[in-house]
Amino acid sequence: MCILLTLLCAAYVWIPKALAHSPVDLGTNESLETAGKIPSPSKSWAIYSQLHEGREAHYYQFEIDQGERIYISLFKPTAPEDSEFLPSLTLMGPNLTSQDSVPSYVEVPEGYGAIVVDGIQPSQANYEPFSPSSFYELAGIDTEAPSTGTYYIAVFEPNEGGHYGLAVGYLEEFTLNEWILIPLNLISIYQWERQSLPLILAPLAAILIIGLAFLIWKWKKQTDMRTVTAWTGALAGLLFLGTGLITLFQMALSLTYAPAIAEAAVTILLASIPIILGAIALRLSLKMQKINLRTRIYFAIIGLVALFMWGGLYVGPALAIICSLLPSRLSSGAPKL
Image (cartoon, rainbow, N blue to C red; front, top):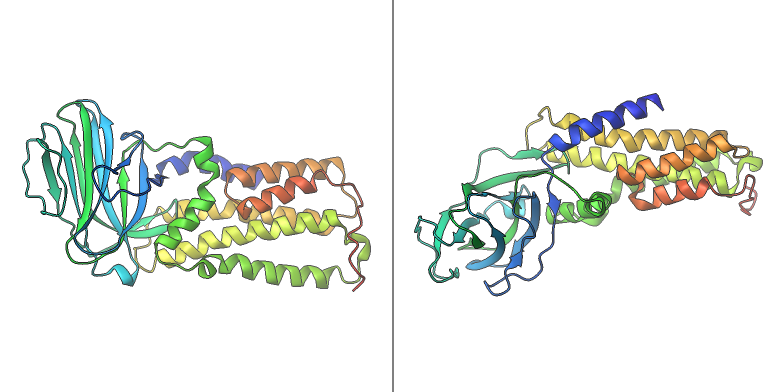
């Protein structure tokens, strides 16, 4: 528990420095009229989307006051399928002095100026420790709003479609709802990177198969310990271990494209917390003959910590909390092995 508390304190200090963005889905946005509305341009948002073909543009809009900072970054995944895909970025707004040439298929509001930044393929990918993932940063804009009003962003590519990401804003912050939903959003991000769902969940599936086989072997001749309570706690532990290994697996995949950097320590920290929670839950379950008050408190704490540290894909935390509430020696009803 002391190690876990130390890791939680480290996470509190390091995670805000991990350059994380809050994912947001802005729906259909293939014209100025249907431009996706960015709620607050100062908060750091991440949009993961796809241009389906060349000469297609996606539009986003936001309201901002004069003098406020506008920060935009365009990136794409490192998947081989997007190797030839090179989108560009334009910012359109009132009183923008730049009058860059905008492609004819990109809509520009009447009277608006435009800043166009062509996408450039970098020689090296960047590593995002919070996700974890790797990406190519293609273009960026960092400026101040010359006047108060509505501004538009357009992402376009003249030749072909592909997956792109758009980061808007610079203040790294999360609401409670956004924080808790991060595990689901991470799965969506990995699919945006063109990973299949079976590949994403493979480490978790492997741990469940190996772990359940071990528990059946371990408890085969110890039927007095094979209770619903013990099985519930053990299954929660396996789920925590599996999600920790998913994080390490994604880190390993990402570092095949991006260089190993110090920020990888943040990823290891994030993976270590659910792994330690899983080890504690399994140890308590393996020793369990009947559940006492202290063990109930431990499982309740484990479940709550795991929920906020993205362990167990919601099922694990739920099982840990349920384990803390189950009767002391509730029989599993499982046939004797």
